[in-house]
Image 1 (spheres, rainbow, N blue to C red):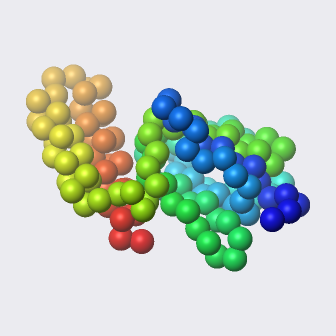
Image 2: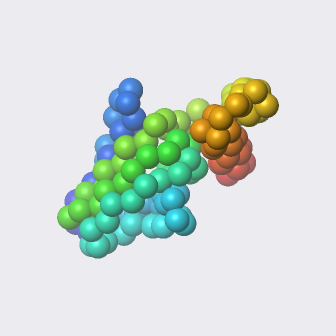
Length: 136
């Protein structure tokens, strides 16, 4: 695949580089609203919420990742994403998602501060996004 009119996409977590390839487009869960990045997109830096990232390769092939919150930078057809966590959709299981929801609900029920409540709610929302992704 030639690199003409493609984006260089890199997704990084604290543990490792999750994805580093060229692609046609990427859709991300922006903190204000989801958005898509195509070739020659204007420079942008944005925060991301936990949810699903869709990478469009050639000929309708797509790769999906369930991710935690983070940031995206787009500059000169290079898309750099740093997220708390990322898991390829093919690695998701319903048991994993159910466990995450249960843990977050336990934390939410015991929360004594607004920060604890917000973190637990965010974890539940991320797990729900994973569940939607599992059905794709």
